[in-house]
Picture (cartoon, rainbow, N blue to C red):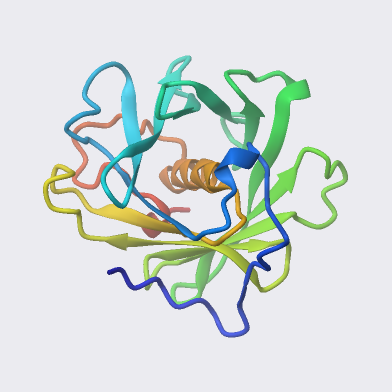
Length: 231
């Protein structure tokens, strides 16, 4: 049994009949979805896979691989079918664009993630704004990601509201499933697209790394994730 991180005061859970579908409706269920994100997993050793997501029984549900000099991430389903492609807008940018399938065509843009805030040591250190492709003027974000360094936790909200749709926190590995690395438990509330949440996990990890190669094999903590609080 896991213990989710405590959200900030005033937070409310997503309304059940107010679905969030960004990538595909099949990833939006009436039940809460929990999954782990881990790296260097025993049965993900072939090819260029570097990150995996697994349900509570250890079944693979997502894989992240790289393309084009490791600056272009692809989120695959368990069968290896590309769901979305994630690409940094440019070398100096803290903005990532996410496209449908194995694409980077602007016509297939689904959403963008932009780093907006870098606060103090004991407060939210990293705030990220998420803009859907339909939100062209980007006056108000469609989703907001807030990260807490002291709790190594992250919270995803709908717009600038207190409507919480997903959380993530660092936890110890599940015995027998991973290589002894710390893993991250993601909790997605009912009627929220968990493939979308997984894509956000990948982007936040990239921003926390400052764009460094996530295939680094020498680091003690290979996947910083939201708990890394990078800037």
